[in-house]
Every structure is written in C-alpha cells, then in structure tokens.
Length: 237
Image 1 (cartoon, rainbow, N blue to C red):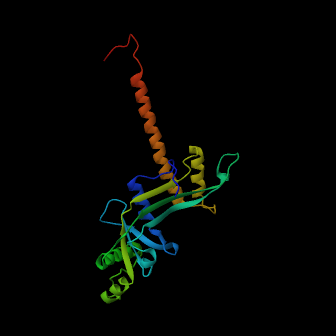
Image 2: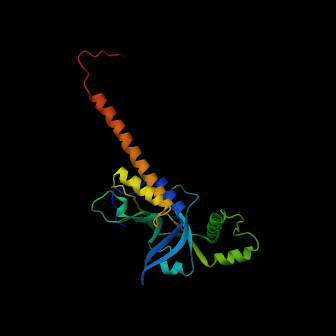
Image 3: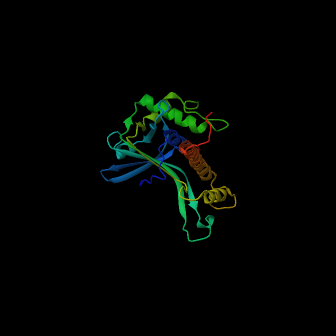
C-alpha cells in the first residue's frame, strides 16, 4: 500500500482498535503458482500488547500459502465509503473514497494443536457472545471428539508483524467546514452512501487533528509571550 505521510497511522493503540473492530481479514502470499488470497477471521493475541495476531486456516490453505515458511500479508479493512463532490463547496471537484486499512506482514508461527484449540474457542466466543443464547465451541451437543476432529482440519498461526503499513484517508486535506459537511452527509439516513462507522472514524480522526492544532497554537502563543521584551517601565513581580 502506497503511504502518504498525511494519512499514516502509527499509534499502536489506534491500530489495535482497528484490528479489534474489523476481524474479517484477507491473507495474501506469493505461492509457486502466483499470488493467492484467502479470507478468515483474525484476532489480536490476547497475551500480547503489540500488533501480534492469531488465527487459523482450513486445510489445505496452509500448504497453498506455505504457512510458516513464506511471508504472509494480512489486510484488515476498516470502515470505507464513497465521498461525493456534491458534499464539497461549489467549484471543480471529483469524488474520492475514504477508508481505513492496516497491512501486517511477516512469517507466521504455526500453533500447536492445543494453542489452536484455544484460539478457535476464543474465536467462537467472540462472535457468539453477542447473541441471546450463545453456542460456544465446547458446549453440548459438541463433544470433545467432535471439536478435536474439527481442529485437525485447521492450522493455527500467530503472526508478529515485521512490517506494518496503516493508512487512514479521511479527508485530512480538506478544510474543517468541508469535513463537517462530509460527516453530516455520511450520517444522513436518506443518502445511499450513509455510513455511521465511517462518519465515526472521521469524527475521531479530525477531533485528534483539531486538538493537536489547538495545543500547538497554545504552545506558540506561550512562546511568543515569553519572547516579548518587557517595556522599560514594567515592574517585576
């Protein structure tokens, strides 16, 4: 992914938040037969506080990807959506697409069967927990033989990325007034491009940008005041 310094995401806490909220990811590797991509749910490693992730693939995807032997790219796609030029002030403009994406690269470690079972159990719990009557992996009518047989058809992995490229393209190059209008349009229920999640990401990103500008302004004002020479008649306190 081509990086633009204005759109770069580097804060580990923010990256973890995006990974946590968007677990359906794309796994890409270069095989002997060319590029191959698979789609699986991936979770942050709960025993780490960095960007290490855990997941599984169904056999024979492990062989197709050369899992544990070749570099793997994991793509997490955050909120994204169309931005109409009609939401900008009058004048020449073209549409664009706002988005958040995180790319993690590295050679994954293959999990033991017991580690894989723990990851599978956690994966099921993650998505079942929001239901009124969750069906957990070890819950009857599933028995141990059934669960372990399913595990043998998968290969678990842990990836601690050696390269991270993350991008948050959310109209940072637009004036505040235009950004506010885009957010209004994204939150409007009558728009075919309404997207509350994308609007929320824009609010979050631009709140941080505006807070940073305000802090810099206060710092500059204080520096200017300190550098201003006192008048000859000014008394020292």
